[in-house]
Image (cartoon, rainbow, N blue to C red):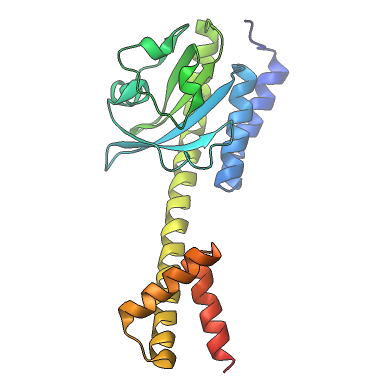
Length: 231
């Protein structure tokens, strides 16, 4: 495989990378993946964030839709090829039968784990590894040194934006969880007052309604508050 190293293409890629931090989390990862896939075409591209406090990798982005896997697949440093890359700060390139590598860890949620080739590159900033990006192909794939070097250089450029975007998402998630807890507590209080039930019974009622209507607890809590405010 040859890589397009024309000046125009390189400038275009760098221009896209420099504005990544203007986008939200999903848009950031979408553009990030489009750029790297332009350099190394792959059937799969997975991005993991490395939390230095917990020493844990979490799947945060994918070329293919993996709604149930993103955010729910975790590995410790040193676990699997991805964990090995995070722990040793080194790129791993396997042309074929990557699933037979002794470091490999299989996840049934990821069909890509049955693919042949595997390229895993650490995403690093001045503080060390902050993530890992993986490329996988169904067929045998030889990754050139030029391709690997280009990807390693590009991920360094976006490392700081990658970290800030991930952390921003974590903060927003925590804020949303706090807001949800407040709404649920308020809704429980309303139910306890108007239905003359205990706190535990109020919570079970909210949870039951959420399950029956296939809604979130937050949605049910908001509905409860709206209904009883009108009374």
